[in-house]
Length: 214
Figure (cartoon, helix red, strand yellow):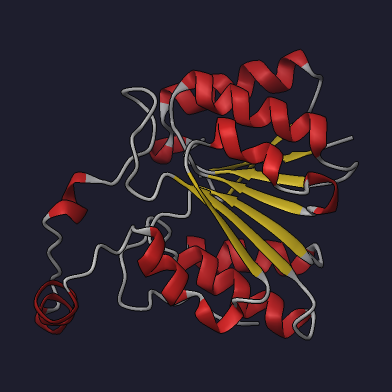
């Protein structure tokens, strides 16, 4: 099993949680993967490396992110403020990204370049998930990692579209659900949605909510 790598980029998914997610994906023999909330592409790269190995290259990765474009509401995802004047504890990273490359790590150009090894398997959509989820062939998706907009309405919207489009037994792993990782709007949206549709929720590693569609 591959171990989760940071790749010198900002990521919200640190060890041991990154390793857990890769293990969970591997356990369910995933072939087609959707990530809502790509950020700087670290999880995307790790997932692609894993799926490339486990499927002998026969996989698809789809990612949706604002990539620095305008957000739709105060709580939704947009380029984090620290990326506008990004700083790294490692001085070599600081020199490389801020002085040499002058690169916004959350931009579509940067993430596309970061994933170029898998350009035949990767499709990225820039913009709000409300407008882009229906562009993804959801019937082909086995596994969704949901970590996009954090407003109540956005999470409800994402889950509703996913429920309508995904096939039976598809897995949705939602970040920011449990314990000290919990974002109240996210948790409330997931709880309300799953109760409304009689879907069980399993808390994993005191952080994620797992929803399996039936």
